[in-house]
Amino acid sequence: MEKGFNKTYGLNLQFKYRHGPSMPQMASRIIQEGKAGQPATSDLFIGSENHVVRMSLKQFDWTKAFPHITKPMIDWDGRVLIVVSRTPGFTYNTNMVAANEVPQKVEDLLNPKWKGKLASTPYAASFDRLALIWGEEKTTAFLQKYAKQVAGLIRCGEEERIANGEFAMLAFNCDLADANDMREKGAPVNGKIFKDAGILSYWYLAVPNNSAHPNAAALLAAYLLSKEGQDILWKTEKTSSHLVEGTYMYKFVKEQEREGVKFFDNPVSEVVKNQKNQSRLRQKFQAILAGK
Image (cartoon, rainbow, N blue to C red; front, side, top):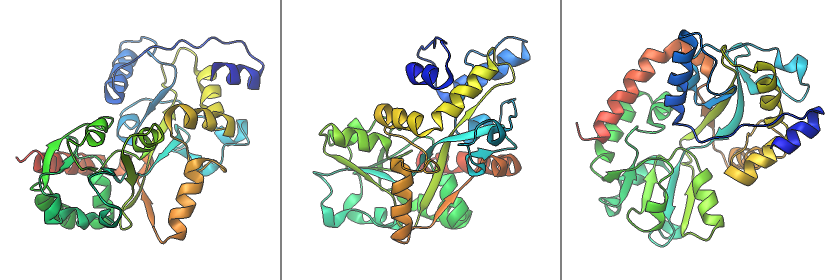
């Protein structure tokens, strides 16, 4: 990434990389650093809409500076860029779920044969987004039934517990990326989306107001939205944006739409308007899955 970045812009900047905390923890750290008048731990932040909406971020005229950045890639008045498109669905063990048993619709998870064999996440991943499609009442009624099917709660990124047969499926997952990566490495897992729940969620790039090197951060953000940058993300993370022509996700979303899937998203600009209600829904759904 550093090599391609410097070649693109004719620079010789050195990247400083180190492992950081989770996205919400990093967002909170940068927020506290800003309040204390300190530079941000990271010049460039990556996170979901629920993370960036809490932060104080710089605004850029992205399309004017970078012709390859189109308006659909930009949200919240130029504060954030969509760098990765995620299509949450389910991850399943191909030895435990036969091809003719793979769920097609969300309510297929309620089949009695899956009772005690399913996992979900402690943070009720994507069920708040499902409620935007189904409505709160229908989603709540489903979750109350689904919670009785679930044998355990695991985090996204723990799909090895699907591969080793501890659970037959994880639903919803956070994305199909981990399933894609594990399948390519030979693990008995696969990932699919539900035909009646075409959810598009995103990872956003944002430059904190207290970024020590905001212009360099903006250049890196723009580079990651180029086809070259997207190819690096796909090679290393099995993620990409459906808004960049030629990427895996560009082709995947087009293919699913041809098959009749209608996708819904929840951009940051809408989260800003509905933040309190969506937070309430997440807490409600988490409590149901936890059996409270």
